[in-house]
Length: 129
Image (cartoon, rainbow, N blue to C red):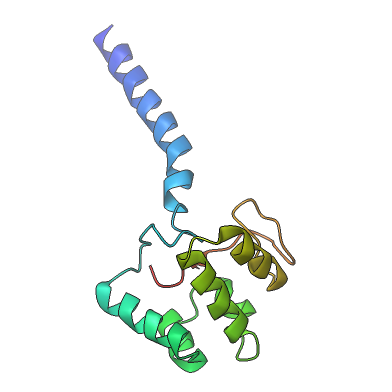
């Protein structure tokens, strides 16, 4: 009897954990208020500097090929991407979402041009956090 109660408890924990894990693992993507797995204060400062200076090379170096965002964002569309970043920080999420879709990055729900498995973002998910 005790074994079946313990086994049932373990199975319940695994099921609940598996349902919650995907939501928490991707919570930072596209949300500047949530720190992502690659966040450090130094990296955040360097990312902010790259966005402010429109320095694509520095951003690309900091990203180190992480996520789909590094395949979509190029030297020619980086200024638009930086604009999207600024809008997110200002809380203008609807305007940022329009740019995000224009860039082909989509949103958490998978909308946007060329969306296959979703954006991380970076990002970059959240790209700097």
